[in-house]
Every structure is written in structure tokens, then in C-alpha cells.
Amino acid sequence: MNLSERKKHLIVHGEAPYNAEPALDRLRAAFRTDADDFYVRSHGNLPEIDGGSYRLAIRGSVSTPLDLSIADLKARFDIVTVTAVMQCAGNRRYDMQAVAPVSGDPWAPGAIGNADWTGVRLADVLSAAGIDENADLHVAFECHDIVEGEDYPYGASIGLSKAMAPETLLAFAMNGKPLEPEHGFPLRAVVPGFAGVRSPKWLASITVQDQPSANPMQADDYKLFPPDVTEETADPAKGHTIETMPLNAAICEPSPGAKLKVGHNTVRGYAVAGDRNVVRVDVSCDGGRSWSQAQLEAEAKSPFAWTFWSIELDLNPGEHELVARAWDEAGQTQPSQPDDTWNYKGYLMASWHRVRVTAD
Image (cartoon, rainbow, N blue to C red):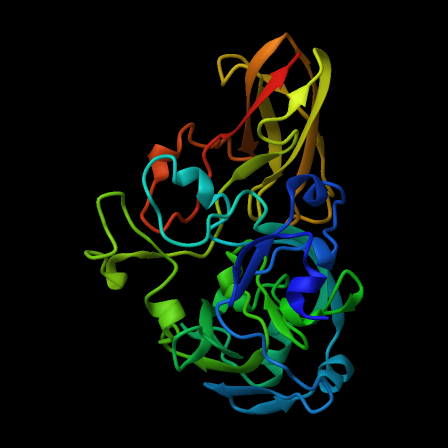
């Protein structure tokens, strides 16, 4: 069974490369997102890799280059599990289109998921390779997939401090099961708190070097620009490289255009804040003129996981604009309008999430 058939319940934005997200009620159904309901973001082909013969190469500014199988990783290093959100930098891009056209897939708020990732700490592997932890270095990933329409493999990099952070993994399992092919089998990076672009799948090699990766996916793409910059005028060297993801919240239920009953209705969604805590979610049924505070559901020992929220709203007959906004432990909240952060690539959409419904 091919990927499209296995994922026929997802909302597909592209067949080749395959890109798809779940319906939001399915996304909100479980704190840990099942692999079948997890969004898929691909930049090229889905590589076929034999797990038995697989090897990961560690090269560059290390004293002991390594070539490791999955069995080597499991035997030589502590196996750990981190609960963390994975989120595309273009999550909620669709909402920016109301301001002006943007490039890229029109993701709703479903280009996100939360899972238990199991693997080994990247820090432990780098230490075994003899890295200088005090140096100003970068850790570059190169992968087995080839970027669509290009002749180079996917690649990205992170700074050494994040690579050595205890939450950053080389993961071979998701929710207690081996990675599915579309999620990176046999091995992927998991860099909690960062955009999914920094958690490459199908790892081929890791190179420790004194500069960020020169791969076009790192050097030219996933850059944040101000609103006056266009695709024609964008200079990648002047763009902000997207790493940490912003505070965000989304309404998962009810869906846009839903017909609800008059009276009490349950509104549910998620909120994320990178490595910070979500401390409050406000919900409005009148477009943001008045607010009520939602109940939060979080795991104290999972700082990189999302927070679920829910609230009962008493709806009068007629149309309602439901709105959600989150607050983090620094007292920061979201911008009210997509105009405030619009950029031509539609990255980091994080304004109040709005859903129009009718009660009768």
C-alpha cells in the first residue's frame, strides 16, 4: 500500500513530494499524536532504506570519526524518550493568505503533532566522537532524500549548544514503535522547540564544522523577512534563519462553518510555546471583544510538549467568531492580526486563531 492510500484520511497539499495534515478534530483527539494522524512534510522523494545495512557517519571537527548502525546506537548509548512537538514553520500559513498571497503549501493549523520520540542523545554521540564542546561550532545534517527538482540531498544544521542540549535526539522510534518511512525511518534528528526543518529525516551523515550548513535548505530557505520584501528582492543573507518557534494556539473543535446548538458548547484546541510554559489560554465568542479563560491540560515533565485546552461557551443564536490566544510564562501573548507578521513565505503564522460558527 502506497503512502497516499495509507494516509487517505489526511488533507493532502501535494502528492509529489507528499505533504499532508490531519483534520483538527483527529489531531485534538489524543495528547500523543498517532503516526497515522501526524502531518507529513517532504521536500523530495521518500527514500527506501534498508535498516539492517544502514550506517550513520559522524565526520568533521571530531577526533574520532564514527560509522554507526542502529544496533550500535542502541548498544553504545543510553536510550531516552522525549515528549515533544514537531511543527512545520509554515503551520497556519493559510491564515496569512487573507492578507496577501504567500508561497508554499496552504497549511491549516494541522502541520503539527506531539509524540514520544525515542533514541539516543545527539550530545552523547558527539562526545564519543571527540567534539570540543567549548568551540563555536555547528552540527550539519545531510540526508538520503533528494530535494524535488534539484540534484542535492536535503540538509540543515543547528548550533552546537542546541546539539548538545539533553532534549536533542537521534530518534529511531515514535510513540514506542519504529519510525514509519514517511517520518524518517530508520533514523531522524529531533530538535525540540525548533521548527521541523531542523529535525531532518533519513539521516545519512552528521558533520561538525565551523559554519552553518551550506545546503540551500539551510543557506537560502526557511528565512523570515519583513513584509516589504518580495520573492524577487529577498536576499537570503539578510533573512532571519528560522529556528525557535513562536507562541501559538489553535481552535481544533468546532470546525470553521460548524452549525452548533444554542447554549453550552465545548471549544477545544492546543497551545505551544517552545520550551516555555503556556500559562493561560483566553477564548472569545465575539471576535475578541470579551474573553473567558480556558482549562489547561499539560504534562509538567514534558516542557517541549503542547498544552491542550478546553472551555464551555454559552452561545446565543446567530453567528459567532470564536477566537483563541495563548500566554506564556514570560507574560507574552500572540499578535491579534495576521497583518502584524505577514511575510511572503507565510512563515511563523501566530496571530489569534479565528473560527466562524453559527448557533441555532
